[in-house]
Length: 115
Length: 114
Image (tube, rainbow over all chains, first blue to last red; front, side):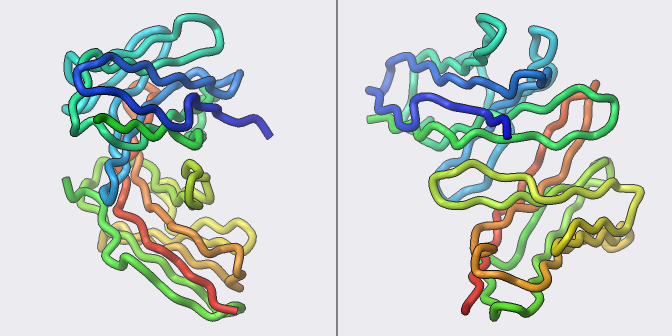
């Protein structure tokens, strides 16, 4: 069964450094998403992306965050200047565009640790 | 943000019995509700969904019930199996121009005892 894959599984970065989290969505999917889960808290929506532009973003997704689909397969989340509070699990998800409702499929996440 | 709430952090059920997980929501604009299952070190795995215009959806051992007047949904698993032990997340979807925004509950850890 097709899967969403995320790399790396664990990223350790110094505060203030830039980090890029990578995702390969399921190949025929057209909607892409990023979520995060801070330890002990809920999974939170960050951003949705369709047709090479952001569809919606949450309050968390400020100017320090950006997303990009640099080629036909990858979907990236960049944090420009990381803060301690960015430490979390980051999940990528994708869903197809088939007219009817299709659930999002999630990757296994990248654990981001900011030191 | 308390739009979706799962009030039980944990639930323990005997193998073979029914597991019932509950979820409450506050926003009437959600158009779909979903249940995801999560094992440690893995991402959420989709289980079952229900449209806001339905009141029941069944898929094998899993049934989701939606009570719109009470803004409440539940997931029934019967019979429960040891492999069902995981964290279960309720999520509500608001669809904007085809893109879904999922709002998650806190999760309920289900343990199935042999």
